[in-house]
Picture 1 (cartoon, one colour):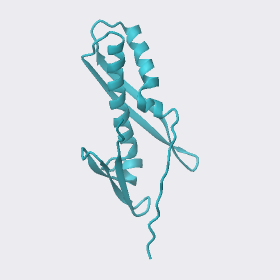
Picture 2 (cartoon, rainbow, N blue to C red):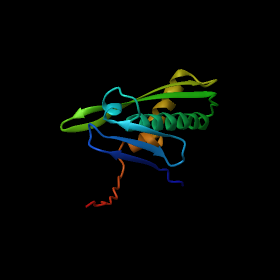
Picture 3 (cartoon, helix red, strand yellow):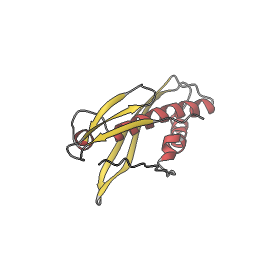
Picture 4 (tube, rainbow, N blue to C red):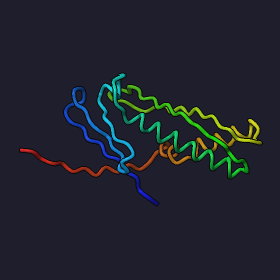
Length: 144
């Protein structure tokens, strides 16, 4: 299976610094800052990218799960809202809301909600937030 990657560079301190994030595929590159993450300044932030990843994954997985149950979805659209909150001395992502609309001929509401619940628990990005092994390989570049 493929391994996907992205890169982020940060220059300066937390409050006055700024950075850029970029997808390895070249599909997107943009700025981020303290202001774009914790205030309403221009630019993106890690939580927005997590929201995009979760919305995309959930929409694809729900489509697959509906098809696996014998229904052919015409359209699935998801908006994810990632909440970051102050947590003691730091911050935590404590909740993600997935709002989905779908056009699925021939399915009733109960069956649809049953499939949505299964997808919510089992799409790859949802499963990541249940806990994942995180490896940190760090290299210090010293300056004189």
